[in-house]
Amino acid sequence: MTPQLQQAIKLLQLPAVDLQSFVAQELLDNPFLSDEDSNSEVAAESKESGPVDSAEALSSGEMSDDQPLDFEWDSMYDSGRGASTGALPDDEQAWESMATTETSLKDHLLDQLSAIATHPVENFLCRYLIDAIDDSGYLRVDLKEAVKKLSVDPEKMEDALYVLQSLDPAGIGARDLAECLKLQLGQDRTPAEDAILNNLDLLAQRDVKTLMKLSGCDEEAVREAMETITTLNPKPGMQFGRGNADTVVPDVVVRRKEGQWHVELNAEAMPKVLLNRHAAGLVEGAKGDAKSYASERLGRAKWLLNSLEQRARTILKVSRVIVQTQQGFFESGVEALVPLTLKQVADVAEVHESTVSRVTSGKFMQTPMGTFELKYFFSAAINTTGGQVTIAAAGVKAMIKKLIDAEEPTKPLSDEKIVSLLQDEGVDIARRTVAKYREALGIMSSSKRRKKG
Image 1 (spheres, rainbow, N blue to C red):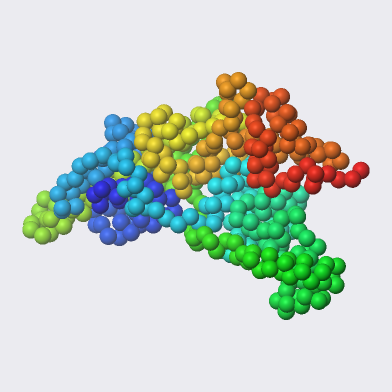
Image 2: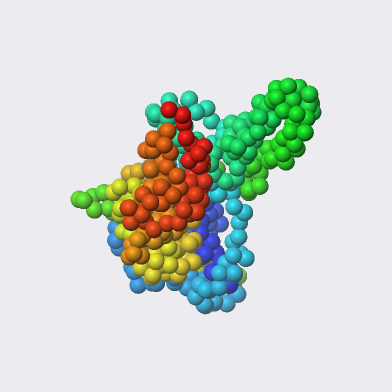
């Protein structure tokens, strides 16, 4: 894999904020590039010669479409080592060895959230809370202030916190150490464990006798509880890499126009960069090392413009396929999500599956229901009765939560009953799968949910 191709792939992978930084550095390093704000005369002359600003070309519809989306970007300029050729390799190991990064805690939580959030409001609130998680995994926001700031029902904020605290790793989203440890132990805590968690200072002092009195348990039970608690992780978020706190800039915007959903590139996410025609004209008069340097810089400038154009077109095309496939989501919400795989999108968009993977990671779509990472719209499938239609796993989780939310507290639904109700809706699912999804949602078994009348 050539350095030029590596750079092109990196450009495709970069989120909008990082891309802006990359282009800003290129503008400083390359005299053959300019931006509209700093060189309006050059910008005007460039526009007269034809569209070279990829954002404007895409939005105006003037951008040519004669290049395939998996164009051999490394052939666009010669770095001085000789022209390079070769298409994007199918071998994913080459890419992984080049661009493997440590998963951040935020990414880990968002990956889980995309599969279980049942409503745009809940999804938004969960994302809001995830942004307030520190590196150790603790929630650093006052919920009362957040409720006031967002003008939201306090119960919905509590529901969002409940969802957040049900995610992996156990203990995430706690507001203090005691809550963190309680979340890790779950609902089946012993009296001795509860006494210790409510008096962590006594645990630090190893005051067994006082803990025995508070819990009503014998010495063996208290010491066993102390041993269990000391094995828990007081900082569950530290096992993940530190995430970037960059502001999310949507790459595409989805709007409803004349009864149809339209996808447009967000001009603010597109770097404003142009070819400096004045500087380009100096190449002809240069000689020796000066000409070699100028030719290399000019080639790199042209490569960057073409690469930005290719990147923008790929994001737009993939986004349009997602919106076309997931129209039910935009009409009705997450329960209408349909199963969607990278390969399905790649086939329709006519790009490599690895390209779709890179495009959907770190790229965001602004919709009337909120801003979502493109990869949120991909979900595994659950077969329906007869196997003719499939429902996204996220949709099934939403159905399970909806059924449990509507149950009678004195007669909670068992997993077997939920299976039966889902089968009535045409969803063929095993009891163990219902139990797994219920646990993933942080919902206790029916015996523990039952309340006395």
